[in-house]
Length: 565
Image (tube, rainbow, N blue to C red):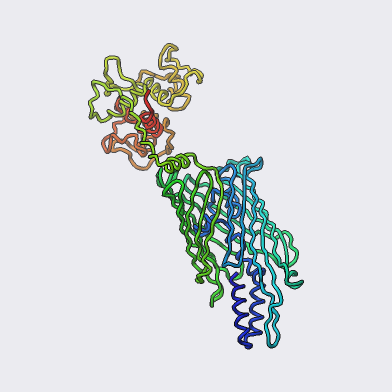
C-alpha cells in the first residue's frame, strides 16, 4: 500500500532525472515483491482485520472477546456467548488497498463453529520497463491476498473426565491464497496458496478476570507457488472487568474492561510487543475505547517498535453492534486509518427497553420502593438492645420465635435441642428427607428429635460416646464456637499458635474452631473481652452469632427486600 505509492513517486522522479533510472527500477521492483514475500507476511491480514472493536482497544484480544471477532482473534473466546453472532468490516487503506472481513458463528453439537473470510487487494499496479534513457509503464497488474477460516471452540471439560472448570479451547484452520492477475507470466508466477492453523486457550480465573493464550500460524501444511509462510506469533494476556456487574468493583450502571496482551513474533531480531486497551460503558448501549498498539518497524538499529495510539466507540442496539475505530500507523499521516464494523450478538432485553423509553421521550419509571416487612418486637428487647435487630429478623422469619407472653427472654440459656432446631430452621431443610437417628436418651415424642436428626446428619452437631445426645443440656460458648464453625462450613486448623481471647489457651479443644469463627466475625460482639468458654450461650447470643454467618446474612438481605402481600 505505502510501497505502491512510493513506487509511483519514484517513477515521476525518474522521468525528470536519468541518474535515478536504475535505482528506481530496483527499488520499485523490490518494494512490490515485499508485498508478497515472507517479510511482508509479518503483518498478515488478520493484523488489521480483527474488527473495529479490538482495533479501538490497541488490538488486544487474547483475553477473549464475546462477539464474532473471536474467529479472527482468539477462537477459544467463541464460547463466551451462545447463539448466533456475526461481524463484518470493509473499506480501503491509503485509498489503494481495498479490504473485506466477514465472519459468522453459532452453536453446534460439537461446540461453537464459525466461518470467516479476510481479503485485501490492490488494483492498477504499474508494470514498468526501464531502458538506458526511459522508464515506460507497459501495463497494469492487480494483487489479491485472502484467508478462509474454519473455527471451532468448546469448554475443555466437555471432552475429559478431569474436573477442569472454566477453561475453553479453540482452533482455526486457515486456507491462504495470494496472487497477481495481469502483468504477464512473470508476475503470475508469484501466485500461491497454502494452509495454516491457530489454537487458543481461555481460562476464567474469577468472575472478573480471564487469562488467554493465542498461538497463530503454527505451521504450513502444504504450499504451492511462491513462498507464502507467515511467522508464528504467540500472544498471552488477559481481560479484566474492573467495574460493573460481577466485576472487581461492583457497579450496576457502568462497566470498564481492561485488555492486555504480550506478543512474541518468531523471527530474526523481532522485538516483543505490547497491546493494551480499555473499554468503558457509560451506558449499557454505548462503549468508548482507547488503546496502544505496538508494531515492529525498521530503524537504523535494525527492527524496533512504534507506538500506535487507537480510539473507538461502539453502539449496541437490539443485538446489532456498530463499531468505529481510529488507528494510527507510524508517523505518516496518511497511514492513520478509520475502521467501521457491523455485527450481531444476542442483545440484552434491558438495553432494548431503556432505549425504547428514551426514544419515545417517556421518563424511566421511578424505582420500585419495596416496603420492608413489619418486624416482630418484644417487651423485654428494648429498641437499642445490642442484639435487637438480629432477634427481630430471626423471630419474624420464624427461626427463633418468642414466647406466647410477648417476651423473647434474650438472657435465657440455649439447650442443645433448641440450637439444633434453630440451625435446621435457618437452612430450611425438610425433616422427612432424613432417616431418624436414635439416641438412648431421645424419646420419639420429643419435638426436637427430627431437628436433632438433621443437625447430626449435616454434621453441625454430634452426640456423646455413650450414645446420648443430652438435648436438655445447656450449650456453652466453647461448644457454640465449634457448632457454628460446622454450620458455616469454615476451615478449621488442627491447632493454632496464638490465643484468640486472653482466657482461651491455644490447647483448648475449641480454640481452632473459635479462631476460624472469630476471623469471619461471628464473635464480633465480644470485641476484646474475655471469652468465658464455660459460660452458657444465651438466646440473644445465638441470634447475634447466627445473623453474622454468610448464609444468614444473604437470607436476611433477601427477606427484607421481598415484596409484601
